[in-house]
Image 1: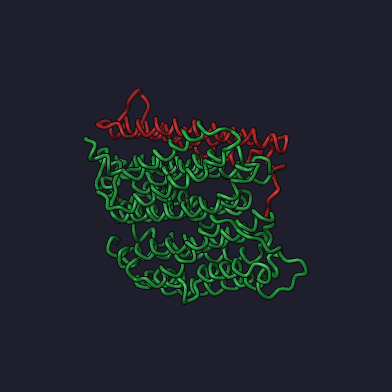
Image 2: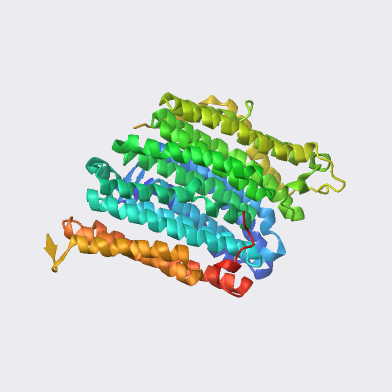
Length: 473
Length: 106
């Protein structure tokens, strides 16, 4: 292997470089000037994101353990943009005195988790996949407990590590059975030797349960709301967008490549899971009063919609999932951005606190409304097209009842999204959240999100590009 | 095929039993450390599975053994982070019983 071949894993190598540079910066900056780490990390990550968009070589490394295709690179770039927005949003939170000593810790842990996700989505065998999954999850559990002086944050951390360790144990048991029945851990070889024996089906069910934990599908979603509520806002947005998106992507790729011959079986499994996920996620979202908890349940419901695209099991299905994740990145991060700004400035996170916010902070209210409309799927914004393609993909396979249930659920979700809009624009409040000026980084993050919500909805080249790179069964 | 006088089924029965004892322990026990121990039990059952399958069914390559090695390493990493978080819990709540860690509920 020569140096040239190593460039195939450019994303991971550069990211490791960024982490090391932040670590070195931390060593050389005096302890009363730690906030200088923030611009350094932001600029380094911005450079890395830009380099990621340059045309790259694709190929296979380590005897098939690591593989990239153009779709994988595109997906890594989507994750990079999402993480960049999250880093921008977290800047003003990190500037607070209480976090002063731990700024570079935040960056190092968050980016390590991103390295794990990059390895996970370009895995070529189950070993690399598992390694990436754990490298992504273990740092995140530490991040969930980042506010170490808050009881809720500590609670979120311990709930997250225990449930994710249990879920990866279940996933591993499934993988060991898969290995026992097929004799290989490489995706391609497993796909060739796959025969639907009862033992293999057992392993497959364990595998799906383990993955469902990570994507928080409904019978396995109990950790989601608590962890999302307890963790700091920016960590929550990372969890709900980047972590969920990466896990959904690799889940889809494994189903399409490894379990190709079982497509009838996983179609049935996902059918049930998606109905449960959409419905229960929506029903619980209606009664939430805490904004983070509310967005947690809304993101559970969105995961149910993602399953519709996976069930399409076609080129169109894969396109719609990647496209939906791209839309979801911008709309969810815009919503979390507003929640994060308000929580930073005032410490308020309840929906009632948002009453009458339009009078004091009209711009933030408008951005929040736009983001929620995009999440709900109202036509002019990108969210509508994301949902539309997912439904088309499921309908093309003949799942008409499922699509009907999904459309009904989308309508129900409109109700609770509009509750927030109503709180901001219509509800009277004697003492609404005071007018404040947001910082430059917060504004930049929100502007990128809004631009994304509009641009992706109107620019068809993005969809065409994803379509060209996708593959079906 | 028998090696060491033990059939493959013997290993599989042990590992499956360990797996479900781990699940049971995780669901029933109220102490965070014991829950962590249950998870270790699950991961070790997976290791037994991998190594047994490798040496009985597919002795021509070492994939199962290597997988088990990596699982051991990751289990150690997971345990260290989990114990750090448990210490954090102990500082905040001054005990590590699950019933007392209930600030967030449905």
